[in-house]
Amino acid sequence: MLDFFYQTVIDGITEDGGGGGETGGIISDGVNTITIQTPQKTLKNFPQSINYLQQPAYNFNIQRLPYVSYYCQRVNLPGISVGSVDFPTKGLRRIPVSGDIVFNNLEIEFFVDEDLQNWLEVMNWLRSIANAEDFTEYTGLQNSYSNATLIVLNSAMNAKYKVEYRDIIPISLTDINFDTTVSEITPITATVTFEYTTHTITRL
Image 1 (cartoon, rainbow, N blue to C red):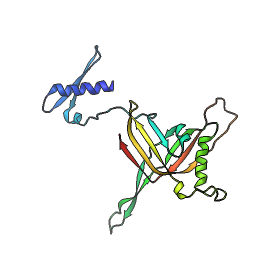
Image 2: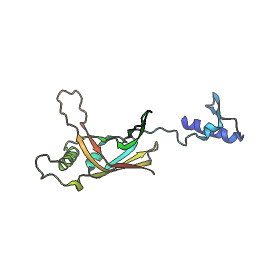
Image 3: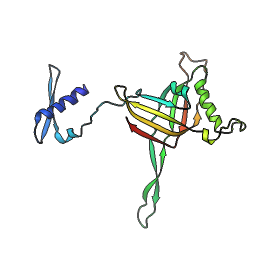
Image 4: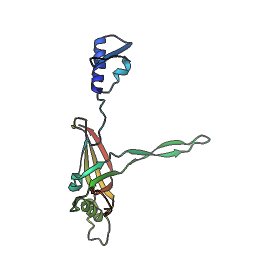
């Protein structure tokens, strides 16, 4: 219906042929007819696509975590903030100036497989970047990072944007909770949180 609305309004502009004022379109379902009058300057800025971004429309992959990538259920596109620093001025209100850029954390929720392969992928990665018991598990700073890619799909499930995360590193992994009191068996999920240096968004 929205696509039909968009096309009829555009057809109204084409048929109008005028140089200004009001333009419009006609919507009809064979029984009811609606005439729409819209300012021409507004329709010039009408978006090419009026479809909404959909939650399941993505593909995600972490080079170092193939099992986590396969069982991934939710992933976020992190937001960004800029810290402010007050610049003092004599006798006047302090003027805020921009500070450092801060990226929100990347979080992934995934189903835990019965062999714990994906959960242990993250656990072993975390243990390799810190001193859990001794330094035998520590693999060095150069092996602590990986890269990840998020492909955002449009409403036709075609690739629209590619988000590339550089130098991601895990900082936390949630528990696995076993429970004999549940009345319905549901898959166990876990969440891993990452920090990263930067990310780029490319239109495909």
